[in-house]
Image (cartoon, rainbow over all chains, first blue to last red; front, side, top):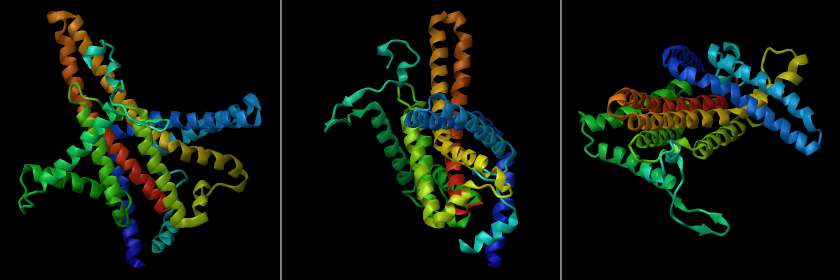
Length: 102
Length: 245
């Protein structure tokens, strides 16, 4: 358990510099696509729901907004390096409680 | 490929080499399939022949093989941790396939299969479905807590959960579009500037010719970079599924 915690810490410690200075170029290339892809998914879901429920523009409009929010959130996460996944990375507390289960 | 005319997009055309019809489905062996086969063969030859000697002090070829192995092993250890070891075969094959596909596409008159969105999307959706199943198997229903950002008040949940789900669903799109768009744009640009060399004649063509040389270097960089980005994002996704937030 102690060991698992240390391993977990090491992984986080290694990850931080890795994401910041390894390749700014690869980071830059990701941003634009992240923004657009969430928007595409949002509008796609909206159009499908509209087609299914026959509520022509409304779901598309709603999911367009949600999709843009998701896109901006993606970009924000990539740029600040909070985490590459969805969902904020929680503090160390939950991290270490997860680790022994692994 | 130049025989079809001088469109810069002619290089992306799929040509049937061996027509095969299976039921109602067209499963012909195309130039895309040919280059995927070639890529697999080249990767296998590169690794098997490179490690033929297994000497303690590696020669150049063997150390290239070892560097690529260690590069991916380190990438996986840094992002997923030690329990990521069992994904090494997947990640390594993915990296080598994309990298060799990109590099093979840089050979004149060859076909770049990574410049087709269906190829990159097939890889991305495989990764996406695999990672989702991995998360579900590992965490069960607890996996869905992934979509609830911690530290957000319950009033905002109806807004945040759809945003998070869309953000999650956008992963295969962004993963595939990035690789496809970079490769397609780069190869089109190469063809366009190469066309200028011919049309501007010997004197005027020097400038675009120099530009094509620089672009070729840039394209080689992008071939490596995009293979790297594709791989590292797959690692991040596996990490997310292994350790939820």
